[in-house]
Image 1 (cartoon, rainbow, N blue to C red):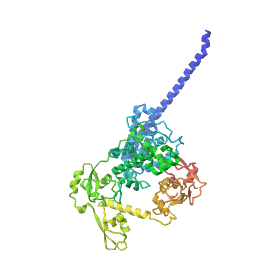
Image 2 (tube, rainbow, N blue to C red):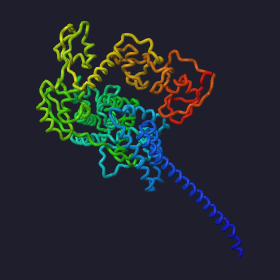
Image 3 (cartoon, one colour):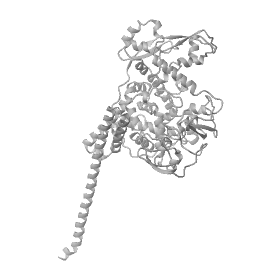
Image 4 (cartoon, helix red, strand yellow):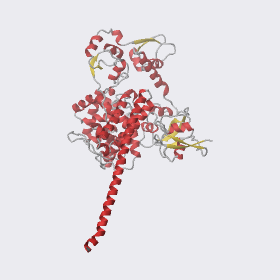
Amino acid sequence: MKNWIALLPLLLLLTQCSSTNKMIDNKEQVAIDQSLVIIEDSLKLARSFIEYAKNAEEYGDSTSADYYFQKAIDIAAFYQNSPDIKADSSRQLLLEEISLEYSKYIARINGVEKDTLGAANVLELLNEYDENLAAMDSDSVAVTIPDVIGEEQEITIPLVLNKKVENAIQYFQGRGRRVFTKWLQRTGWYEDLIIPILNEEGVPEELFYLAMIESGYNPNARSYARAVGIWQFISATGKAYGLNQSWWYDDRRDPEKSTRAAAKHLKHLYQRFGNWYLAIAGYNFSPGKIEKRMRKYNVGEFWDLPRLPRQTRNYVPTFIAAVHIAKNPEDYGFYVEPEKPVVYDTVTVRECVDLNVVASCVSSSFTELKKLNPALLRWCTPPDKDEWILNIPKGTREEFLKNYSEVPDNEKLTYINHKIRPGETLSQISQKYGVSMSEIKKFNGIRGTLIRAGKYLVIPYPQNKAYAKQLAKSSANRTTNYRSRSKPVKSVSGRQKYVHVVRKGQTLWDISNLYNVKVSEIQYWNGLGSSRTIYPNQEINIWLPGTTDVAKSESPPISNNTRIESEPSPKSSGNTVVHVVKRGDTLWDIAAYYGVSIREIKQWNNRRNNLIKPGDKLKIITTN
């Protein structure tokens, strides 16, 4: 009996613990149930956003359609790695449906001509995103990212997983989802063309995704550094690998020729470094400067290289992230249907021919022929080439040969006989027709620039009148907008003057990216002519939209090496309003709307940078 009495407190304690455990279990179950309800409601909300978006699109309201599609995919991206989603097939299917509807929408608005977010811009945004994240332990510390690439797939370029790679993956899953979805769709364009060439040249297939990072597979892509095409060759490197160019054509835009050149170039870089990461970094930067840093700092790995330009530091990890996602997109929440491949037949023409004539021979259009032949810069095959391999719609080769043989020689390329008026110059005639002076001189056997009134000049001219007007207009704009100056400009209407002090190692391209302006504008404002030479501590004038104008670009970073001339004094009193940031707003827009400065908005809201997002509330003090 005494033994039972002695054990009674222990039994009571155990009973109490059991009761407590049940209460805890019940609370945990309630929490789990609430979490599942939130997930269910969120996915239903995302699905309704998809319906709103499709209805808006049907009624032609593109702004609302874009807004609701983005809201839906933001919810999907938030839950894509949730174990509660993966544990329930119905939730997983709904998530896949939302992602697929979004990708179909991106496909509907896709197109090279409307490609406003190029690869270079994406890399710049990713750089900003990376720098705004929490400080990383080191560039080479492994993180817990699932290795979604199966063992059965042979990986010839090692895919290291570290903080830099994780940041890039997170960016593409979030803010960069729109453009990466577009890139994934475009893989269908050239995959069947590019990968066999890479195999023939003996380089890894994974380099196919390097073209994604370089240009988003856009053959017409052009960077601030004047790199061109899918593989972004500058002129000198392109010529070293057989990519020639003239006023009429540019081989760097040819997907087949440029891929073979890129494969050879990358192979040479790999032979030079014996390491694919260093080879890829050398492709983006400068092989010589990479080697110089390796010797100076006695390092042999890309991840250990110090003092690399910001873009090159992120270039290799961004490539690795792209390979991970592109090889297994569904594991990262991307459900995408690749676009149909660009297919064509080829014919060799041994005379200059207008693409409108070719189009009529194959029942196609001038626009379609231009898309199939991105290397052609003008309206015809190059007159300065003895022969040209022309791409025509698939299955039309015999039709072309038959119909083209019946076209009279004088109709294959059209010319205008221009009568020179008194006082008219070659430059003026060039602007009028959109044909370069050198080509006019070549066609007419002229050595200098002297022409005589009353004489005639033969001018090559497109049969497509709409294209001819476009050509002349673009030529006039190029000539009048940024003529070489001998002195800096003193003022620019509607703009405020910023003075940038050049840091060591900076280039005009770096500064143009920093302030989101063109290199040609900086040259014009500072009287640099065509020169790109600048020096440390040199003062460069940058004219940016002032507070009286609405600017589409974000404001520049204000740092120790930037000063504003004639900066307005801060407003100290007035009415306080709260501005809720809408989609597409920038600090420039908000400052212009309220008639205040960007610096004031940042001071009033205790902000150190210019990043804002929809839904943010900004305090604005307006004048009485």
